Amino acid sequence: MSDDDFIQIFHAGEIEAQVRFNPSWNLRKSALLARIVRGGIDDLSALFIEGCPFFFLATADAEGHCDCSYRGREEGSDGRLFPVARVLDPHTLVFPEFSGNGMFSSLGNLLVNPQAGLLFIDFPSQSRLRVNGCAEVMTEPDDVVRALWPTALRAVRVRVEQVYWNCSRRIPKRIV
Image (cartoon, rainbow, N blue to C red; front, side, top):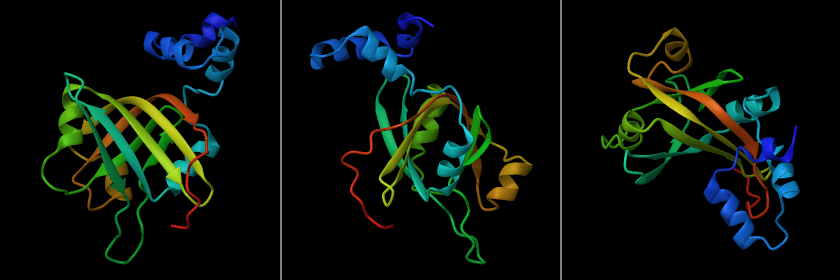
C-alpha cells in the first residue's frame, strides 16, 4: 500500500489541520497515523466496549448542529448490570435506548443524519476507544435486544466504519 492509500481515511480538513498545526507533518506521518484506524472491531476492542459502564454518543442533525450525550448501563430488578453496548460482529454493534428526558436529541439526529461517534473511556486503565459509523434506530427491539436489555424501549444498531484506540494522555486516573 502506498502513503496515498493510508491517508484516504483523513478528509481534506484533517489533512489541512495536520499541515497547519503540526510543523513536523508529512505524508509518511499521516500514513503511520492511518495504520491505527481499523474498519472493524477486533476481540480486544469488543471486550473493552462491553466492559465499559458508559460511553459518550456524538450525533449531528441534518444541518450539522452537534449533540453529545452520555449513555450508561441499566440495572435489572435483580441488581444485574446490563452491558452498555454489545458487539454483534466486527462491523456491527448495538446499544439500548431507555427512557430519558423525552427530548430525543440523539435519536432525532440519527433519523436525519445517521453518522455517529461513540467514545468509550476506562479511567482506571486510562484507555479510550473511538468507534465511528452509520447508525440505525431499531424501533422494534429484536430478540437479541430484548434478551440483553429487557427494559429497553428500542435500540440503535451501528454499522462500524472506523475503530481506533486514542491517546491515553490527559485521561485522569480514577477508580470508578
